Amino acid sequence: LTAIRGYGLQTYISKEQRKPEQWLRSDPQDEPTINPEFLFWMRQDQILASWILSSLSESLLVTTVGLTTSREIWESLEVSFSSQSKAKILQLKLKLQTLKKGSLSMRDYLNQVKACCNTLAAAELPINKEEQAMHILAGLGQEYNPVMVSIMSKTYSLMLRDVQSLLLSFETRLETFTPEGGQYNTDGSSPSINFAAHTSQNERGNYSNRGRGN
Image 1 (cartoon, rainbow, N blue to C red):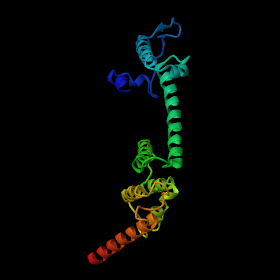
Image 2 (cartoon, rainbow, N blue to C red):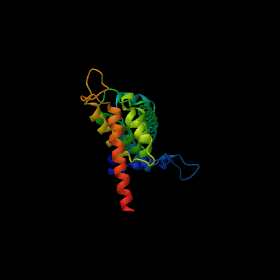
Image 3 (cartoon, rainbow, N blue to C red):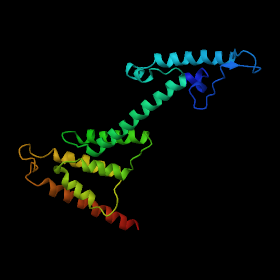
């Protein structure tokens, strides 16, 4: 489109284009003569149509068979790309709803969720931060239940970056478990209890700090 505008040919693909009359007749009794403006328009239009067609892949060329003007070709491409865009958006929404952390590292998982949300935002379908956090939590395995319970039980809303930070921190704690059972730290204590105690201490500290500041 930039190149078309650069050559001043955007009117040929515009919905408001006005094709000149092909024939001129100064008097109803006279023989019609070819309109010079139409000849000029036709030459420019066919040059542009040829340039557009030469830039298309074979799969798109099939959709333009039988079309003769630049505007007809352009409309066909608009329909094709619009359909592809809608399909891509549906695919991204489905991926976001079904995405699971599985064996991904927490950082890779968070990045995948972020990539989906950024692409949807670019398509003018933004996902707010709270919904992003919910999508993140929905894709976690049972091993993340302790941190999920802690996040969901907050009496105040956590920001998305706080949720991400808690999950990354909990992943680090999970990595200290023994590989055999996957349920206890090397000192024999429960990771769930440790996380709950650590979170509780932090919350008491935060509450105390807020109280002194009031």
